[in-house]
Image (cartoon, rainbow, N blue to C red; front, side, top):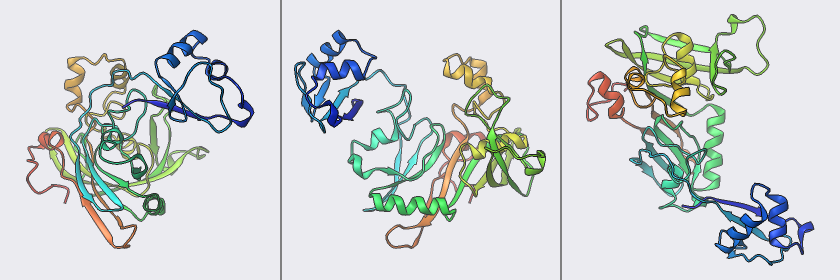
Length: 326
């Protein structure tokens, strides 16, 4: 699968030669490089191979085919939980991005699905982090996507996650109703911090309300298996909340026992000792239940995914057994 950058030629550039347009608009290559790329068929105009003296017209579709650098390996072992003419429900493994981004393009759930579905029939309704496993809801029509997204925004979709944390999580239901904001003390730009509203006298302007309920399922050898039911749907909500409560997620390089693990991970400098401390090769978070109304029939539909083997194995749970989060 090739990466393609595409642009529609503005009307004011009618009559401009292709090579002149490329050199003025995209300065990351010099003139000789663009000439070489054109000669090797890496530039298309309206879907046809371009040539250097070609003159452009307003409305022309210009495409540049990028070279495809090697992508990191991923776990491609996804499965289909449900499919009809409007919905596709996928059980995503850990270590598989949903969407192209950064170093990942073909090695994504989107890229893998492209081999069986057309691009205009894949609309991701929800998405999971690369290291989070579980249920991904995909609409096969634009109308179905809009309908499902409205349900998510209205808060009527029921979700449940299984998560493994460090420490002995308290018994009973824990309601964490508070706010998320950027963790100002972290070296990681995207890291969030959860806090209760009475923790600060003045609420930060960029703080976002979040609410999650937690229930202890099982404890074993200093770790706890917890069911998490998010009411809101904020970025990193479950992971950030658990860390702030004092129970970092097992295997989590950002919200785990030591955030410097993430800094070493992105530089490919994790040691054997680091990997032993993580216990899992990815964060122990699994989207195991989803319930919403079908976009066509309006009937309630439920989807369920068993706890994956890497997480279940920490508690001696066999995948074929009844899921402990039921």
